[in-house]
Length: 294
Image 1: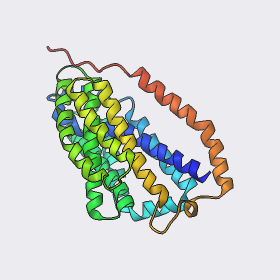
Image 2: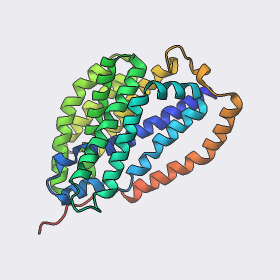
Image 3: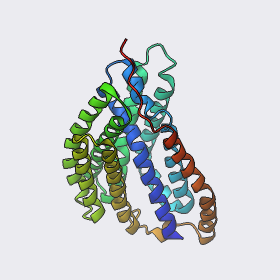
């Protein structure tokens, strides 16, 4: 049961990073790929139906940690109290910006909030998990730079996949620029893990950049998503050995009865969540068209 719930928590965090990764990227890149309000609206419409659903993965992952590994949960969220609070502030600011920008006369402050509220969590989650694995400020900064660059690449590829017209062309150029940055950063950030998933993640990022160059956005998006999955796998393989200094996974876990009850709850509810979210992405799978020229 302990190993099963660790795998479930790793799966939930990985799903969050993949799905919120392109949300963050789209939010950060908006001013770079959009030249007027219509184009800005076009880019944000790509994540409009799904961004709040993607955040459910974070709530579920944190809740599962609290229930299945309370000592791990307490250690992580007390050690990284300030960064986690800043993450929450960023998510709130981004949410307010996304909800209010169509309801105010001047949406520039909302756009600024979306950019800041996307970049801040994208950086801080990488810093938190890098510090958990490597324990040190330099590693945390490098981890934050890695996740920030990966989210930029992931979001740019997603925009190129889901839009048409000038936004798509600018998103493709942004993806190529982000790819040129993320590959060397990944070499430094992931080489310390020294595992096959880490090396495969670097290869996937290089493949995503090459596929973007060839205008194969669908495959490029699959490659960026795969790179995030592989990097997350490498991190959680390290955390499996020691989730916190001086704490083993068995010591951090809840009792057998609690894990059994959680397993039944997860078995009943998780399939519905996955089916619903898959249906949402299927319904909104078409490209968002550019505004017609007057």
